[in-house]
Image 1 (cartoon, rainbow, N blue to C red):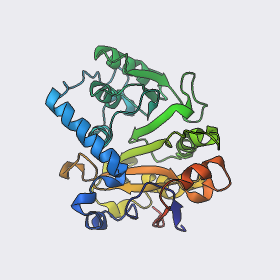
Image 2 (image 1 turned 30 degrees about the vertical axis):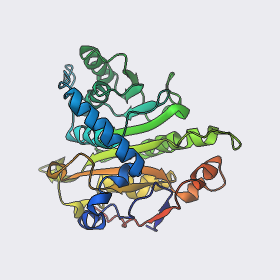
Image 3 (image 1 turned 180 degrees about the horizontal axis):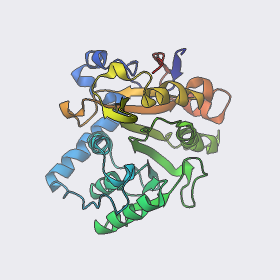
Image 4 (image 1 turned 45 degrees about the horizontal axis):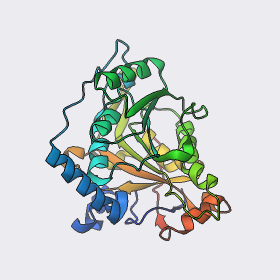
Length: 314
């Protein structure tokens, strides 16, 4: 696939498959800057220090299955990795803005953010039984003032009470799992990123910062086990092309005018994060041309080239 150009916050231009070169490309002083930029990292560190002084939050009370089972019935490791990264690198969003979590499952990530002082979190999932269990967990942790649970199928319009123009941050963990298309997810992310910029008046005295989309995924490879296809965790990033995740990054996001910028090392992580990939999804500059969003992106740093590796056939 041809290279895509990302209009993204300043970060070393890294192919998302090249994790071996990623650590070498980032100096210790730059570690984490790929996620948030210097000011947000500084603010996030101060917030993290304040939380440490106040004492660690108690582990959330989580009912994992609600008697239903399925992928939304447990908290996956990528949700914990994403939670650590957000709390280590970003301050709590400003008043009035919303944090949108897609595929929230048990709600543990949203609850953990709420316990750390974040507010206006909307945790969504497409399965009614999963959303019911999520509501149970939010209430069990007394986080109803911080977290709202909403059912949202990615192919549907935004549910009542979710104003895409007010979303400051959209997050998701392990959203790409089964060997199926995820074009509806890519289209939804494009709507989130476009909503605020398209609504902004060109002559407005004050322009709100663009929304951001941050995803963490566990690298999994589909293999045949007898007559059944199973998805096995992998730490070998060379296996990414041709996987469901690889196709989402290389094909489905670009089809919606988006591209993925690797975040490496993952803030707040360590060796335990081997096999987890974090990306910031941004609008490619070709998709922004000729729209109201182009004016907004023009005020950011010059776009960086993001070379994508061609996905191989499985």
